[in-house]
Image 1: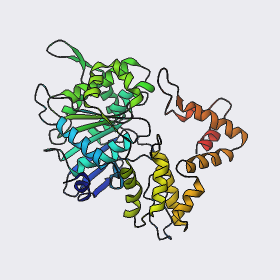
Image 2: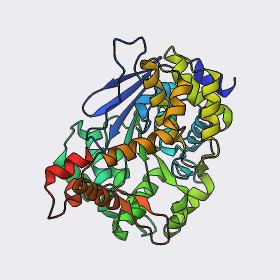
Image 3: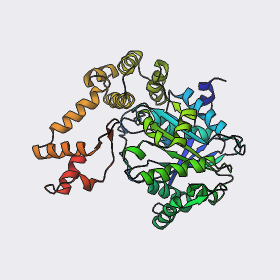
Amino acid sequence: MNDSGLRDENRSIRIEKDAISSAIISGDGNRVVIYQYQLESQLKEEKVSTTAQIGPNPYKGLLAFQEVDGDRYFGREKQIEKLWNLFRTQNENTIQPEASLRLLPILGPSGSGKSSLARAGLIPELARRPLPGKSQARVAVLVPGTYPIEALATVLARVATNDPTPVAKTREFAQELKQTSSNTNDTIMYNGLQRIANVLPEIAISPLLVLVDQFEEVYSLCDDPNERQIFIENLIQAAGDRSGCVSVIITLRSDFLGETQRHPVLNQVIAKQGVIIPAMSTEELRQAITKPASNAGHPLDEAVVNLLLKDTEGREGALPLLQFALTRIWDGLKSGIEPVKTLEQIGGVGGALADEAQCIYQSLNSQEKKIAQRVFLGLVQLGEGTSDTRRRVKISSLVSYKDEPESVKAVLG
């Protein structure tokens, strides 16, 4: 059976949400529960008017695809199939001495869709087609940030307690992650993640998958080399434990590959087991453009599809821009505007975002513009020998002594 047929015949998944997790359940009862490190509110997707004959916007715009979007994530079927097979192979014969680490690195440049492929592609696929004997699984999703050990401890505490704010358990797990132990060769190692996972309820039948998204932040944001080392070693030790209770997936920007040479074991795993995500082919882009609209009952005509393909192909980091343009096209349909006309009005892929950003900036007064400029500078991590990258910061760090906090928040809004 070909890749697309394999997925199309069992495309549907049912998603249940609560304050702690998103449970993705396939049609035959396989269950994958997602635990997030970050629980802060996300930008809300725009919904079209219920009075129109067009349903909710099926495109993501600038919002990232997440696990709950598996039923509208198209175009990467072959890559999902490849990752699923690699992941299955890693999780077979775990008791063999020569077994590879259960660590799957997903690599690619910024904007290549690594995170979406892992979160909206591979994870839902594990609900549709679980690994043999692992129909129940728990997925701990985190972004390392400045303090990766705290991030890992927090999501593990949520898995263990089912509590959205497990402060005490987070502190306990963070200490456990920092504890050293020795093996029969008296080698000192950090295996707190392995020890925590081994005592989780029903771990034998409900294994733990740790998904570290935007792994490059352990280099770009974490300034403590000791914390970085402890975090990475915990992942490696757990992924190599013969109990098979823990598997690890990381997404990593390819321009940070040189940084991994600081950690030889990780570097070797990436070299041997890493998957570089290729640019989407013309047919894959066509699927990503047409399938959501078709499933929503309003197929896009061939002319606009061809224009979008022409604007997107070969353009670095174009996937988010494509999704943003598609949201504007859908909004135009709501108002009775033909998609080709909308695409001309917004200036093609990328034009919509640039135009909207400029309009927002020009709507600010002179003081607000100064705040906006400082905010954008504050959200950039200057690289030292690497590319400049985005960084996440607390709002308080963006407020100068001359600013009113509410004014800064208004500009951010």
